[in-house]
Image (cartoon, rainbow, N blue to C red; front, side, top):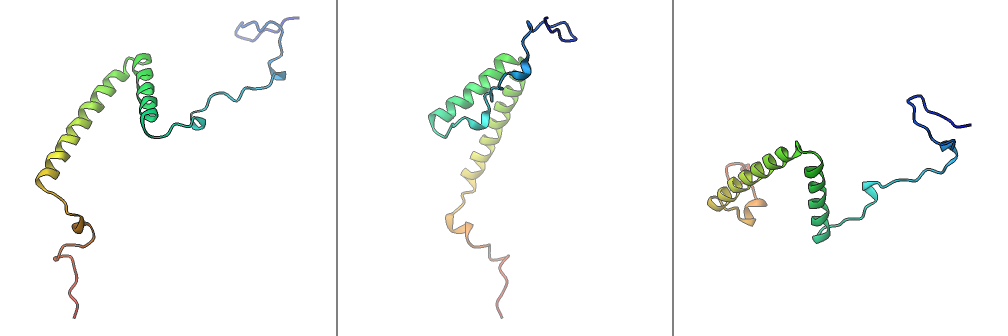
Length: 100
């Protein structure tokens, strides 16, 4: 006797409940660190989404343009307003409280 699912899929009489489940591939178990392998993983993941979902091309284009614009603004701002390492540890004189 063959079992049939309500939508009409024929499983050939096998009982799927008795089979052991495969744990599957989970992203949190993939050991990908920094460096070249991490970069290849990130680029590959982006390419999979860009190829598989055509609408993601517009998001990729927008994010690259926005990221380039923000990077350019930050680069020129820091070029004209350099930050000294000593400036990071001490507040400016106007913020310091006077000692009696």
